Image (cartoon, rainbow, N blue to C red; front, side, top):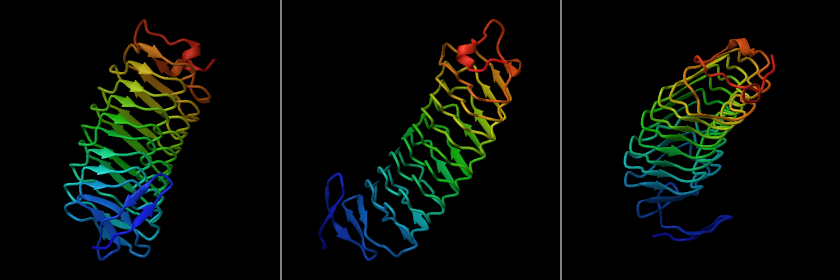
Length: 267
């Protein structure tokens, strides 16, 4: 057995067994990758946890195979793996921590299984080539800045199991042209779709109870909004600086008008 210690800015890890690829395990946890040359890797079948920062800046890694028994992907586990092209998350994964895939600029597609109830903040932020995202039924919350600056993303469907789209979850997704918010979603967080410049229309379903401040601010091409229900809690300047949107093009239920302060436009 080969043992050593690996120092991060947060803590010390006691490393366990070093496999033939220079990847360290301890019991059912993958602790740390120390391989600077491989392009593909299969995580050991018995692994249930990939630890925080395990593959941080693994610059040559293009393909990773995850075991079916995997339960958790740690904070920054694959952060800034700039050549990672695809990731297939097993159906049993329950936790994707913050920054897990942040800055994976070659990643093109991702499927979030329903076993993941909450994927946390910045999970896929700055994945600038991420063009296809599937969020499965069962996911309940989309974390803050989860898809920030995913500039290749063109459409997204939020399933009915999701209750909260957190603050700025899709901010800066400038090529996002279509969003489907399914009946069942309850809260659209502050700036959730901020600066989604490609978005032209949006429908807010009857299940929505709260739309927070600046939810659709700076959506430069947004020109049609349909509000299907009576939203109980409204933030301010929800559509601020949506230059093509006219009040006449916002459809409300009868006897449920939003004020100028809430809408954020004066025309």
